[in-house]
Image (cartoon, rainbow, N blue to C red; front, side):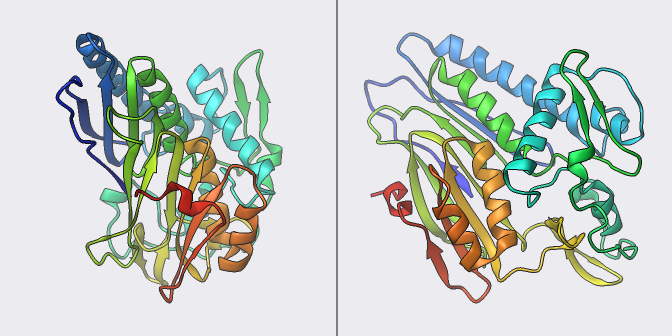
Amino acid sequence: MRSTPAPRTDRAPRMAHRAFPAMNTDIDLRLWPAPKCAAAARRALARAAAFVRTAEARLSRFDPASEIARLNRGERGPVSPLTYRIVAAALASARATGGLFDPTVYGVLLAAGYDRSFPALKEGAASAPVEAGRLAGRYRDVALDPHTRTIRLPPGVGLDLGGIAKGWLADAVARRLGRHGAALADLGGDIAVAGAPPGCDGWEVEVADPDERGRPLVVLCLRSGGVATSGVLRRRWQTDQGWQHHLIDPRTGLPARTDLSAVTVVAPTATAAEVAAKAALLLGSAAGQRALESSPGLAGLLVQRDGTVRTTEGFDAYLSR
């Protein structure tokens, strides 16, 4: 999924744009500044880029100096407000989905061979047997203290925020940039927008065909909220036990077995979209569609492995005309 440039009008200021690699993905920040605010827009983009890089340094489980890595090693002490808020949001999302989204799958990801950043992951990574269900519900045992900003993990439990951090940060960046004009924050396909570019109904976002046939499945038009896609075909790797992918089903402790290849969700926030897309993918096509349709504010597109496409009621309202 990717954003597409909005057209420029003669009376509108030039769009400010910043693209860079971070968080093992491509970051794309765009801002159409209000009149006479071009310089402020450039400064805002620079601050937003610095914010994303700071977040990466604190949240990456692959960086031994990060706050998450230190927590996973059992070290104690307060964490930054940023880390605390994202961990709190992850645990709240786990409770809201009944554990379908679970940030405590760190150990299972390691066992599946996802023990380094994806660009560095080599074919043939060792894959140890995983005890089915051994981490189910362990998010309930993580203790937060808002007064001291401390996070206590029980023995044997680690955190992986890959299923929520980019959406949460996209929301935060879009809010910050939105003070200066119409903004879009695309963090590896987790996208948040604030306002519409001049002369447009909204920002256009292409939803990729999971079969990668070189054309978008649909094009969305968004002026607020967020959109995210979760899939099982993009981030996968070969191990001595066959192909593995990064989406762990907390109910089994194994890479998800589902009849869906991808789910795209539009929601009031990119955080909600990212979490809901993963939960729907785990549930499968029929139950996943029901779950999305029963959640106010969510609209989804579900692509089955056989190529069948399902959409929830209301999804068509977001299609670009």
